[in-house]
Image (cartoon, rainbow, N blue to C red; front, side, top):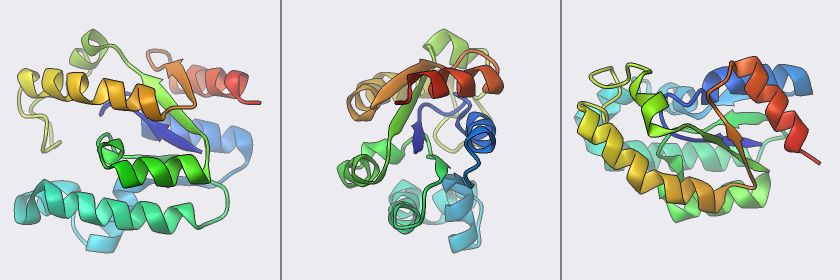
Length: 160
């Protein structure tokens, strides 16, 4: 199962709660990229740019998709690559953690260590670009504005 959504939508926190409820392993794709590269995402972006990060991310996703079942928190931009969307759809259920822009603005993401979120305009641009992609790839969408435990319960409620 893959959790997709904007940075700050709670993919990692919800993923941990959901994995516990389902008795499945939890995988954070950003952490997998960091482990394989031996560098934090911000360092990868600084040294090789977004293209290098996306290359490492795609390799990590391919590796993860071949494993046994798990709850995977994807990176916010994982879905921008059509190959990644194909991998996710072919190997699991995709859940979109839907978070309104105003909610994300209150999460204090701008100016953080997230390389693509230096200004509020960056957040707005990413949200406008990515929301249609999240909508298209998702098997289900859930409101991400509740606690991680409540969002995990909402996901369980929509699963067959």
